[in-house]
Length: 187
View 1 (cartoon, helix red, strand yellow):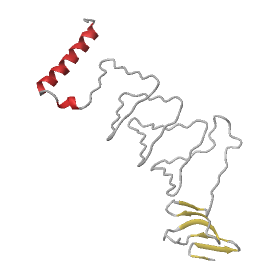
View 2 (view 1 turned 90 degrees about the horizontal axis):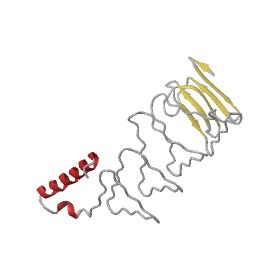
View 3 (view 1 turned 120 degrees about the vertical axis):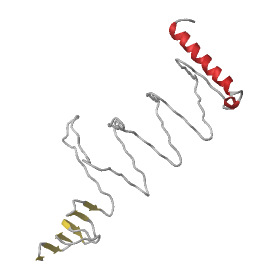
View 4 (view 1 turned 135 degrees about the vertical axis):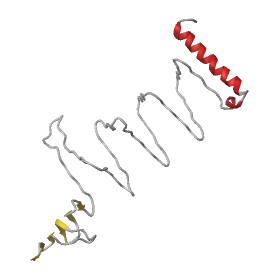
């Protein structure tokens, strides 16, 4: 069928559409759907929609070289979202790298229950490391080393309220004097 830029062709088991409107009211640029509702659609607004009732499986990279990407998903603008509201997202590879490239980029991992890192060697490198727990923090190992080039201190927290403000300032001043003395070779 064709009238005023619309195309609809029904064949046994599937149909092809163009220029018509989909169930969401979007104008279809090109779509193919089976009688079971599976298929794909491109809208005039530039949206691509794929519908698969069970497993969507894509195999690529059979002839790709070691340094050649087998799959690239690139968003020129906007975000990329992977969702599995009733399942898990599992990423498997020989090596996995998460890189935030922008100078102000960040990597944030949020979990409402549990976050675990299991690896024989764990390295953390940066300028500042902050760990704040609302209940407890534990460190345990066969050997524990702690080192601070300028200062290495531990307090129970109750000491923060002890003494006057002047006493606390004098403690800070003394630590600073000790550090200056060590840096200048005076002691």
